[in-house]
Length: 478
Image (cartoon, rainbow, N blue to C red):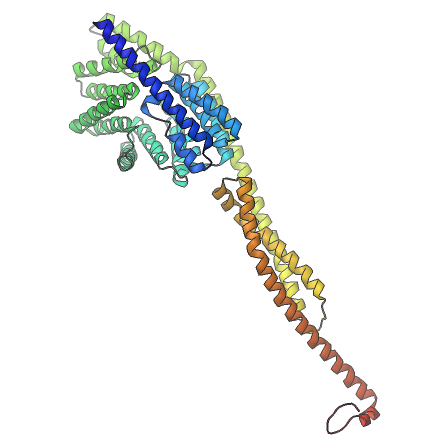
């Protein structure tokens, strides 16, 4: 009988895996042909599901397929996501060093492509590495940066991920007010968007907050809601989180029997799986509870604790992660410095363009409005062309960051934007040049007439007898 149950369970698991793989293949095909960046990002984020995240091997394989088609299509958005999937898969497998390495590569690609939603995704996934290792300051900074990118981006789901995870980090740091704010906001947004993928995780953390606040009944309610949601989503990782949370809750109340019950369930649900390292917390509680009453159980869970602890916190891993973190921090500082230099240079160029445009404008107006110079129309035409070029360059300098944000720095779209600006400037330049030329012609006539009068008056003053040739009534030359 047990053999039959095991067989049907394995058969069901294989069917689920095949169905999930088929679904992902269909999404990858849609991603490959989608040309709209926002829609492509939506498809990419829809890959993530509780079933998907329960299989690190599937995550890495999906990243490999996405990377192949991204490189064939020159798609930086998909390429950055592919490396993020590699990092996510290795992290869920317990290999944090390899995971962080891929996340750093993903971040570099995401910065290059400039898509805000993908930057939010990549930074959020990278922050998980530090959250797992309880490096709260680093994790919170990355989650907050991810939220800023998500607000600027187009995908609404990405607004939720930083809130869920920042709330978890604040909870671990016992900053309960901040944790409650983040988790409540995330919970409300997820209900509004009908997004249940991380609902079990959020409910578990809400239970943790209420437990620390002393609201026992509410905490237990949240934990059981989390377990129900985890079972619904077939996510034994989130199931482990909920059982561990309940065990910690009862341990804080010194209810040993309940604590042992849920701690054992937390260990068993991830036992012999890629998530076995998640048994570290419940195994520690069981070791401490059994140390004076049951030597065999103490030895058993101490061994589980040691294996889980070594996989996540061995000294070599700590040193390598610290080195990689330092190198990435230095790279981020260099990127920030380069951005500041570019912005400073752009502001200087804008000032130079304004200065040159002001000089050209002043000289042109002086030549047009001056009452003593006769100016060539060619000169005005030359100055008008130079002025138009300066105006175009000035607008290019001012609007370039805005165009880059709208077009994601796509060369073809940037060119279209600049052509549209030029199309607006040319008629304006034509009308201004026509006005300036007309004013110039009129001014030249007045200057020539004034000069002619002066010559005549001078000639009459030097030759009085010439007045005899003038009809006194008509005052015209005979």
